[in-house]
Length: 423
Image 1 (cartoon, rainbow, N blue to C red):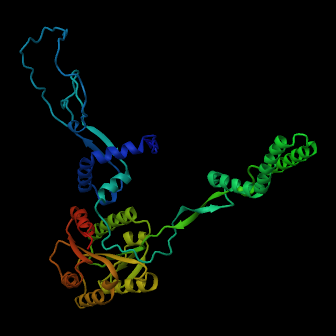
Image 2 (image 1 turned 30 degrees about the horizontal axis):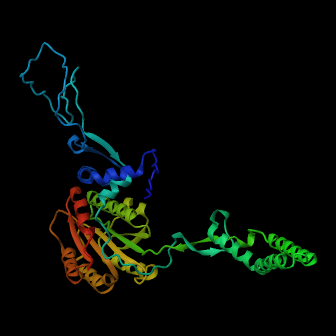
């Protein structure tokens, strides 16, 4: 039996395998610490690492030792303060460690075990059990990722990829083909020489001719090289495209005058969290940012989060622009389409039914998933109720949630993007 020991090191010359084993062992402690960190941090600080503390009782290791028994002789140092049977009072104090809260010149203790998880590990635990719902592998062409795969044997290639077995086999086949007749005649000539020596030992001329022929055949066979460049065979490595489904996430945000700066900040935090999630889980995904008030405009990430443009509220302008972008750049037959919309719920009353019709008739049939986040502490208005009608038609691909304060962002995010059972 053979064993493979992975001794690869991470960036700080520590064993990556041992660290992964450690993280799996204390997964429950780390997940709890990550959830607490998300609750007390701002969303913009979520991408940093975190310090995790584990109680001493949970890191104790079982040990083997000799049990009590037999005859033992022990010598204990004496003292003038205690006698046999005296009770020792419990040390006073508190805090995270086992020592007191005040400084002292005596006593020993052991703090809880504390270690640091990296940014990537923090996001792994934070986004665990989350996924884009209904991710279907559609058109698998057009990918720009490749992986090297073996594609047989070639007569040309890099010396580092030489196939020794196939090369020796080709060399042996060549030697047999070039010297097969000579070897056969050599065996016959040797047999004739032995027979002639037994039956006619006085036939010096015949013996000399056979010996001369044997010498000539041996020289011809020896002239065939053992290995020739023609025999070399190489492992053929080709780049094979890696199939991957293509997905696009549309981010729609209301920037009208009814959206206060605090509401916009909550929307920005939600989209930052969403953006981190998308970057973390999907390599081939595109994000389209659309801001709207009375009119909609496609913008970049910087302008989406920090532009000061404002105005009235017509949500259907953003939906129409998204539909145009889908028709021009993201055919539903090739792309998985997702949309996340953030708003305070205000909209021109006559426009809300238009939004419902656009979603039901044109947008939702092509969408894999659509989530609507309403950031307001007030009662729901017309847009929310119209979207409830959309949810009735598309229960598996449409979801809406309400956010009141910053503490609701992460729980709402988990509700929107939790993994769903395959049907």
